Image (cartoon, rainbow, N blue to C red; front, top):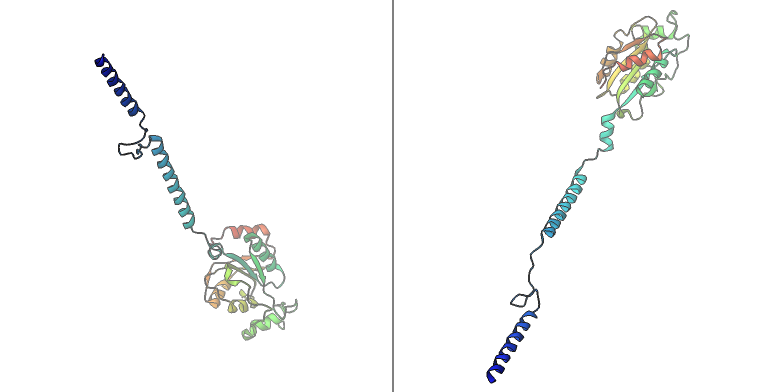
Length: 240
């Protein structure tokens, strides 16, 4: 009997110890510290993608910050502007100058003598007329103009200069303007109006007088030149 009771107590003791072992807290190591569980595959991919996105964001910000923005000064230098300068005795050159300004979307500047030329002054058949006298007395061709300088002159890189032909040369009021301005870094295109004479050496003489600038071969127009004729000439120019 005692033997049976001893065996029963031994079995109860064994079951008790097993139960205590099963009640130990999960997630603990033998030392009692929390276990470091391995990171799942999804968490690893998530962290990797997040880092990639962060790197792309930083790269994008750097690219934006380093992108050069053109300044107003450089834009102006690249663009350039066109100016049409002219002296007109009877209105013919004025008309052509207006056509050129329209075709080039340029500004216009008229040369106006302080002492304007009258119809009698322009009568080259009269030996006593003003133009005949000035032609025979070159020292008296320094014609004073109401204005010889142009506002914002430095902004223009293309300058058309128009005039009537007087004795195979540009009408001398133009000389005053040429002498008063610096044409460095400008492309200059002369044009003239004439009933019969050509451009002659008028453009070359003005270029010599200016001493600076890139002077192109000019064009002669009749007094009745049309807007279409002038526009076609402008479009055919190799002006850069």
